[in-house]
Image 1: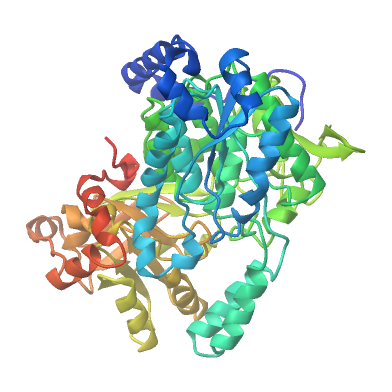
Image 2: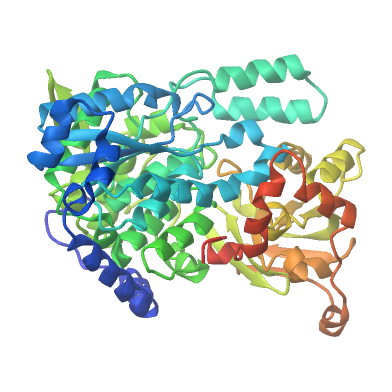
Length: 607
């Protein structure tokens, strides 16, 4: 659906954007006033005292000191989330040296401003460390602020990819919104064991049909080298949202690590940032930019985690968005990609089929995305092309007009679905979200008796004991941000999938999160208010019939109104509260658990 004409914007896109702008006017104007004040100051080394300047650049070569202090050439900061625990971040080890050398060739200087923590949800899934995962986002944001607090930089390069890292870096960057900022990804690992095949082995293991040796072999065949995991979870959703916001070098998201093209794109990030030192990130991230990220998420069936994270990202730039905005957009944004768990393709196959560029071109042409400014001087249109090498020269080429793999990527004229992959649920159990893009249509409505658990370990034990062999709505409560940090409950997916595969009507309802890679079992997640905060999920009892209706958008306990209103809320057992608050670093996050806002408010800890 390519067109050279400027399309009319879809009225719902216009309406949602206008509503966000109106709702956020006071906070956005105050934010922009602060940016203006900061941008009018003298350059860092000019306004600092001599001792401050000496400390700031003490370890740099004499020539670099001269360039910064006397010649006043551009000085860039790098905030890095490098470590060896995350396969996606391992390639960043050599990036500072490459960036420094490229900047020197272009007449600029570079310092690594600081490092931020980065944890792998794949390592901590189902383990106590996962209870720190959500809060790591705001910890990363604070780490970013500490790195940039040296206040000597003319622009910033952010090195981060995975789940909480990109939102955390972005929130931190927006608190220094007067600085031009570009994100530099590292790309996905090569394709390994197909995601569907991996999921089958997990289900067989859950049933006791294969042992740990077979499961470990499958997992290591799927996760086997440097780069992001190849399913379309939160990490890879991050990359598409950054493309849609114009905060990448165009087309950078899914190019392999350590390739010639990847190296050229990293060099280009330095060149582009230096060329756009007049483009502060805080002004770039306006309401249209935020809406574009929301649309990209919906059109690709991306991670449910971003219904939390992007509320917080928006707030960092002075915008107020909520799940109602996502829901209204989802009703009109078509699903244009089928990438696991929404399909069988992985992100490498998605990239080969046209990737983010094809999807964004279709959305722009249909008036379903704003043609916003971007870090690229060409604006968002630059992100509709594909990077490549012409000898040693980096070039961008137009993508085919028609889909090359219609089983993976489609145009707006023939989408996989006329609506996006996420749905808002509401009812007497609270508000929740469900990722519908990977759930078969015949499973979009489930009504069954509830079986209630306070921990995922209790649910897994009941499954192994054969207690769930029936139609059932599994409720796992006291998993919200105040209770235990709102961990992902991805370990529940295989047993629930086994039950569903046996023909039972099965659903999950929880105030916790699910991995961005979860999908085929209907799951009402992020239920707000959470049970620990007195949310209605705490009124539910074993045996109550629960109806999850993703068609009508309802989440309802089928209990008479008078009885429901009179029921007291169950409280978390003191012994479990003790477990939630101690050991393996949990004590350090007690203040965040006390202060955190609800999931729909972005689980923000800094407001």
